[in-house]
Image 1 (tube, one colour):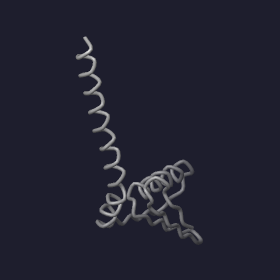
Image 2 (image 1 turned 135 degrees about the vertical axis):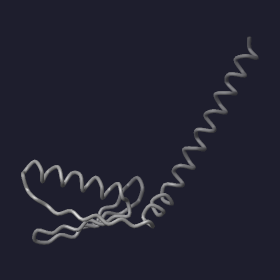
Image 3 (image 1 turned 30 degrees about the vertical axis):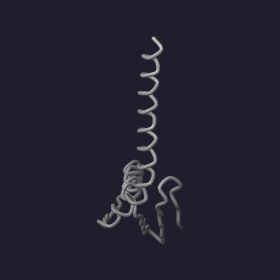
Image 4 (image 1 turned 90 degrees about the vertical axis):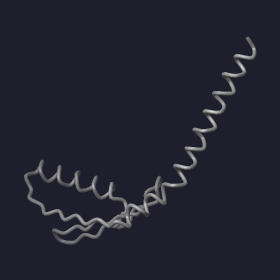
Length: 96
């Protein structure tokens, strides 16, 4: 099974068979959330599970590259808002 994040564009790959599930994603937060949910559900049901977690340094770089355009866009909007706020304040001072 494959899922794609509509916000970031990262993928989650799931392979499962009898008593084994493998989750892979370039997003460490995605894998971490799944790990926490599965651990919580197993604990609630008193089921012993073995979770192995492997991370890849390149994953963080890839996700940051996917997020970079979003950060740049929102940074630009923030700067425009600050300029507009300053102009409005100047306009209000001039009108007094």
